[in-house]
Length: 104
Image 1 (tube, one colour):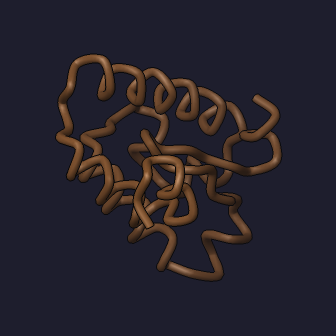
Image 2: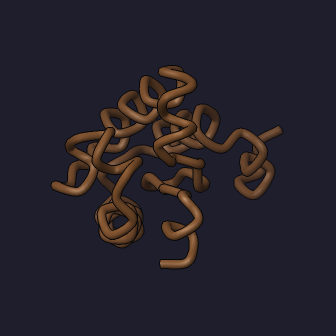
């Protein structure tokens, strides 16, 4: 809740990114990367279906972040992504976290 209140949104296996209305209006790069990461992880929730609503609605960010945490657990527990796919998602969305997975 706190992260979403400050404008941070998460995706499965990805660190939080600032996604407020002001940030979204300045650049489409984040929106494009967000959509790419959603596709790579298979994440879908009704709270991030419309990116402009996600960036302007705190409650949507809160519920989206909860859905993303649950998706992360499901991805890992069910093995829906291979180790290589997980590394690709992390490399794109959170490259500094690769060291936690033993990748330089």
